[in-house]
Image 1 (cartoon, rainbow, N blue to C red):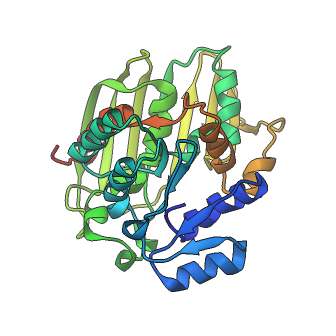
Image 2: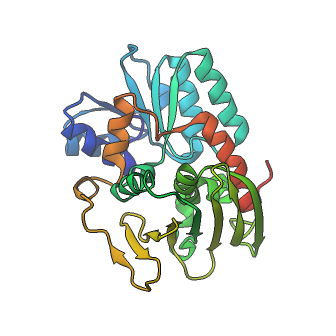
Length: 309
């Protein structure tokens, strides 16, 4: 476990209950002591560059350090010999870095997957089952961020400059994972923030590779929230908040919760993390984000956000 902060602890809650052996690697002595005290496990200090332990082909690495260090850490671990690596989203901020990781992963026969836990929400897993019986025809989503609550000093300038990739991609990733990657997309943006000069208001529409029509909007300097609506011919399935699934039937204005969903895992752990981690360790990568997929997606995110590629 490379990292000893908030997300590391969320993974450790799962790892502890799965009775797996784990060693954490922390950047600082304070974080290391916190992990030792809370989880009673070994926690080494000095960050990933100090890691020099022998590893086997069965060992796996979880990378959950600050976004600006994800690329360099993952690159180090591939060369170190890890054959299975789960790295927190977005894996890297630049397409060139992702392409380098892809090249290295092929050279060293390493599986590198990017962790987007919302793909594994109980609400989303239930929706996937529904969509095997009902054809998805359209999707509408909102990518508004509560930027007024952000502690900007907590983030690296580069991470803020590419905040759509760093954070907002959580929503778009889920949408495109289900509806398909857009093949035709028209994007409009306006406004700016001091730390995000490319825009603060976003809207667009298009068509995906699965022939699903899509539309989106997002306002980073006005009210709003993350939400997604998936439309079939007879029903609109709504994720708002994204952890819960509700339904509006054709011809009705009522929106009703889908009560038969078992939310227990998402209530006991950070939503989606248990199922995501379990799928990873079992070698089921069908709903995990690959490096190749992320390279395609970041091209889309960059168009939506107005970034140069």
